[in-house]
Length: 135
Image (cartoon, rainbow, N blue to C red; front, top):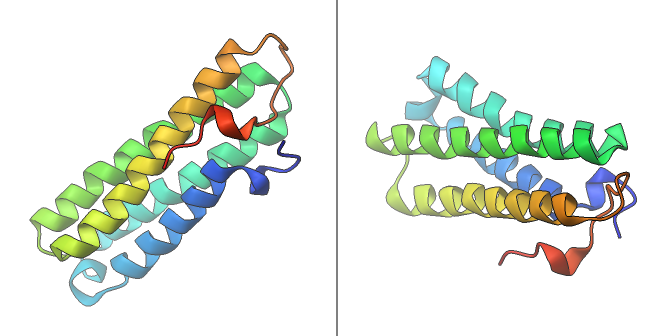
């Protein structure tokens, strides 16, 4: 069971995604589109931050709410990655790798939300790993 938000696999995946987004958006073509670069970075940061804030809230209902926000931000990242690919800021292989990571965190968040909503303990904000593993 997770004792800290840093132990949650969804947060770890979000961290990896954020690092990928920063690396790719720092490339020359992408970097020159300051609006898209700023927006995609903010969305990636939002995923990590909402998971952390929700976990620290220590109530199930707030945690689920924040996980929903994190999932929405994961969708935003995926949409912005498509824009970056369409503008030829990313090569297809780069796009696929980072898009898959964004999709993975979205699925992890969905499954964690489902687990928490099914839980009988109203204060349960602990992760049961096998309940939401997405490979």
